[in-house]
Every structure is written in C-alpha cells, then in structure tokens.
Image (tube, rainbow, N blue to C red; front, top):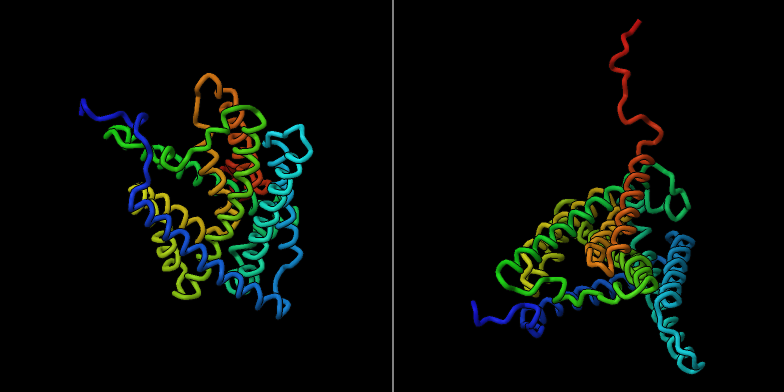
Length: 319
C-alpha cells in the first residue's frame, strides 16, 4: 500500500511466534544437552568411546576459536583491555570446545556400535585421511546440499520482498561485520562458521541418533528431525520454505552421516554470507566462489577413487 513503510524502514520487533520459536529451540537444546551429559558420564565410567578423537576434535575447535579472536578482534593498545578481551575469548573457546567434546563422547560409542556407517568418513577425517574417496564424497554431498538449502532460503527472501515483508536474513541479524574488511571476512565467514558447523552438526546428529533409538526406524527418526528443524521457522519467522530445507538436512543426516551434515551446515551459512556483489564486497565474493568451485572440483575428482569418469570399456569387445 502507498501508506505502508518499506521493509528497510521498519523497526524489527520480535513477534509472539518468534518468541515461541526461540523458546522451543532453548528447551530442545537444554533437554538434549542434559541427555548428552548423562550418556557421556556413562561412557566415561565404562571406558567406551574414541577419547583420542574427542580430544583432537575439541582441541581443533579451541584452536580455531582462538584464531578467530586473533584475526577478527579489535585489539586495544592498553594491556588491561587486551587482557579482558583475551580472557573473554578464551572462556568462549573453552566453553565451545567442552560442548563439542561432550557431544562427541556421548554419541560416538553408540553410533559406532549401532550405526557405524554414519561415522566412517568422519573418523577418517579425524585420522587425517583427507584423500579418501568416501570422505570426498561426503564433503561433495554436504557442499551441494548446503548450496541447495541456501538457494531455498534466498528464494524465501525474494518471495517475502515481493509481498513487502521483511527478509528472513535481516530478521535473524545478518552478520554485516563480515563486509567490513579482510580480517572480519576471514573471521566471520570462514573461521567462526567452521566451528559453528561442527557444533550444530554434532548436536543435530546426536538428536537424530536419539530419535532413531526411540523410533527404531531410520526414516522415522529423519521425519521427526525434519519436524524439529521446521518448527522454529514456521512459528517464529513464518518461513515456509524452511520445511524443504529441513527435509534436505534430515535426509543428508540419515543417509550420509555426520561429515556430510557438518559440511552442509557450513556451506548453507557460507553461501548466504557471500552472495553480495556490491562494489565494496565483490572481490571477497569472487574469491569465495572460486574457493567453493575448487573444493567441489577436488571433492568430485577424489571421490572417483582413481576411476575414470567416462569409461570406454563398453566399446571393447571380448576376444
């Protein structure tokens, strides 16, 4: 309407639905975190699980979080201010590393025993076997489905703009600081997103595993996971395409496992943060797209395991 304020001039105020969606997320998070703590305690007491892998993963998360602070923080020349920010960064890094360690210790022994194929590629990554064809396959699947999810979310934004509504990414506090320099770009788009994807991937993989234990059916668990992922978007920001993205996430988690799921979460957020071709950001966008294409090409080539893409053996006759 002519008298309606454009969405860019509208003040964002959280609605009742968004508060309900946020409350749902908090309840789910706390509930499953308590469950993870109980399972981890049991596994430690019984001596189960890949403790070396858990420590290696948590140390990686710790190092990446500290690296993000070193790269992206505004370092003050005063010793007191540097110490204050350093202690804050270390506390956040330790907290995230501890949560990742907890989730891994909780879920790894049970999945390895009951659902081992879901963690084969993940275990090979922790062992440094990056050139394994299965690892490359899951990275490629996670990359492509992450891009698909980001396209669906951007389509949602386009549809909302056509009806004069506020885009989803602006409702969710889009990280504009990723556009204000190389340091912040590397920190926000690469380093921080890597840690976020690891934690979120582990968390929802843990949720999927518990749902499978309850339902005793893989696809029943996947359907319930899709429902859990859809509720905050449907109730909160009234995003309807989130149902499709939730289904994609659930299928990847149930079919391909932890590594593909983690890569999906990374590239979903990654693509949403680099699709900006404004003059001040276009160089970062180009570099990012080159990175995505290079990784996809490497993953595709490695996943072939040395086999030729187009075999000509069918032209050869038996003698």
